[in-house]
Length: 382
Image (cartoon, rainbow, N blue to C red; front, side, top):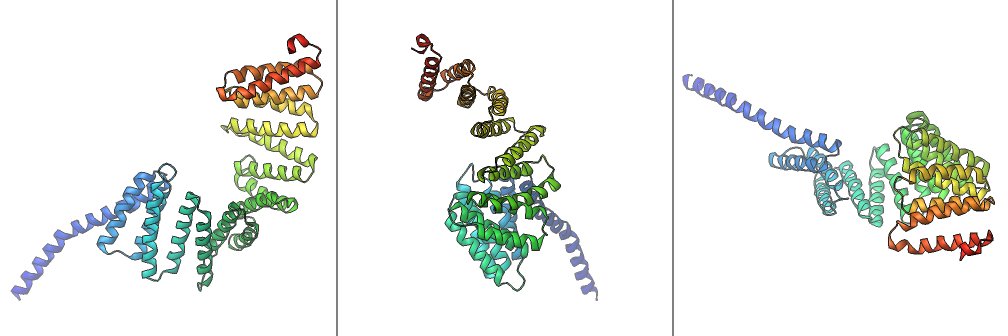
């Protein structure tokens, strides 16, 4: 009995000594997982990669659950992929990490994890611009998910959405897949959900590109209502819907509706506090060109004056072109002196541009000479 008691006492001491060590190890392991996740969400991808790499190695060393290891590998691959724009070799690292996860999912027969790895690998191919490979991976993911006893409707909807986009990027028909994605999003989320609104916008843009303006307008109106309700009327999402809707009406020949929608988009863009003024100026410039085509020179003149005010900050070719377009408006309005003044302003800007803009400057001089000749000022024209 005494011997047994001594053994138990020694064992209790060992447990008491080991407990803090085990607790410390658990804390260190959890730190790398949690910190890696936090850094990934904070878009600190380089530091997230370092933490997650340690977490993956710890899982392998300690024989942790394969599913935990797969999840960490996918997070690590995401941190690596996000660095690919600045360092393309990181895309190779991300691919290697995902392929290691794929092997693990195959060994433990985890179809759900396998298709998640396929989705992650498809994003790597997207960033490389390898759209045929991306399409093959998405199609395989759709096939595997559909064969599961209980397919995940949200994953399936997003996968079909990406399939439509990648087919469009290759010049193929992406509309059919996006139409199916709309149905899947409506079933998973509802007809008026924000996720449904996003795919409606994408489908409307593709309909517009295909010249199917009635279908484009139907999708874009629905998307606009959703984005206005969820994000606000002056949100970037709502303005994008509005701009595409206006473009669709213009391409359909409905000039009155297009003008009204463009004006509404411009007004919303102008109201966004802290918005990109350069982007607003570009929109003003583009809409001014449409008003010129429609013969509304007064409104075109107003918009060009507004965008020129913004372009003056950076000067350069954009400012010169805006001055020349305003000169075109004045000339078509019969205001030749004003047209000549705008051309002269454009000429001064061209003079400050790089030598390769010499041809644009020469064209400007020729236009001024022609205008002076029309004004019976031959000496100045010469």
